[in-house]
Picture 1 (cartoon, helix red, strand yellow):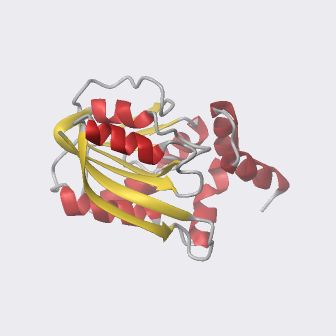
Picture 2 (cartoon, one colour):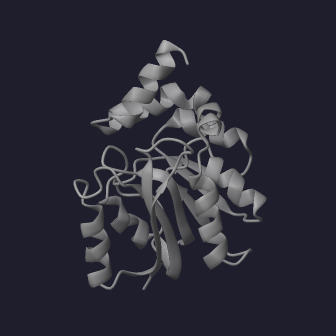
Length: 209
């Protein structure tokens, strides 16, 4: 791995701001897929399996929230899902995702900001690897619920390290207590990569009420 790429990866994993995240992932975009393949990245396959368990083929649209280079979108397409939308804060990553030809729409925007989608628009929201204490914040859950159809599903993963610090369990409970969603499945902690003990993640399937 080149020094520039190592610097980009370090910035992405230890970001303290959205500008850090954007800069890190823009710099990593060209080598991201090769790095994930080498490390045995599991999250896109796992999230696709959860989507398949809860969402019939033909139902859509589906938002890939924090799509990156589109690995999840490619998995979902191989599983037979259409009508996919990608959202990511890194235009460099989205440029790679666009080259896959699996998304109808790609949007460069920040999870946690107000999203420019209609309320109750998406049949499902799926996210593989976007949420964590130094990545997309727990505050973004509210806006994702808002743009999901009543009865629709949200399949979300969160990095375990710093999960309490990032307020993720608290926000999950708050939305459940407020009658915004209910938990259908909880998985983990599990390793997102083949041989990296610090890569523990949790995954949830929620249904909007």
